[in-house]
Image (tube, rainbow, N blue to C red; front, side):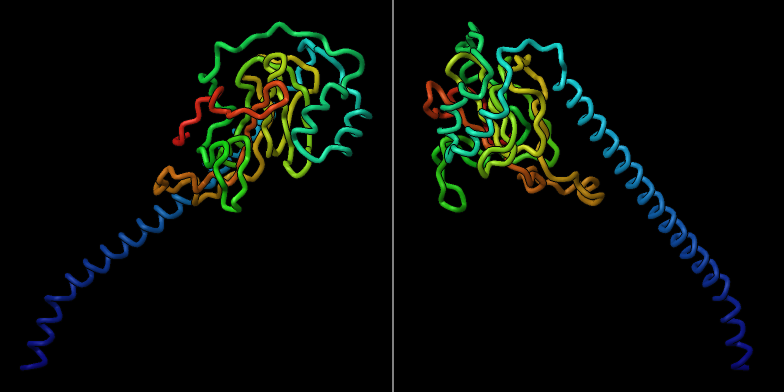
Length: 259
């Protein structure tokens, strides 16, 4: 009698257990499908972003390497090498820029004084240190430091003459622009620089890319970013010099800390 009763109970329970097992199996298959779709989407997104990044870099390089731009001078590579070898400071290098040209540097009547305080930063990023603020190593600089994402595009904030582009001291690749006579915009820490010394470039012209590599899948797909700049691993140093003296970049640039 007991065995019969147990058999009847088991017969009653078995269909429910089988139904539950089938439901769990379906849920598991759905989870596996979703994981495959997520991985496929991540791979597709990574490939797409890499393609966009490559296309943007190639387009920026093509725009910056135009040969139809006006020139104020032609660089003398020998004199440039001598200046680089003999200089020990940014100020010293900037003061010797007139010696890197072959012949005379054509004059300019450009005047952007009415743009003071309204220029956009040359790169999207987050302001880390203002001029005169001590950094983590307790070093105070004349310029500002901006945290950017890897491979961020750096552009000319206004029409300007390229006075120098290339490596300088321990500052990485440097771009020095002259928007008007006696004023220099110095951008240091780039991964790549475009254009040629002496060229007069329009506002918005790409002048380089920041270094580093693009984010991994997890960082690309993450939705937990808090906007604090933790994904901005590169830094661009911006210094402004007028009549041979460093001045606060805030005089020229709008540099809120939110980037």
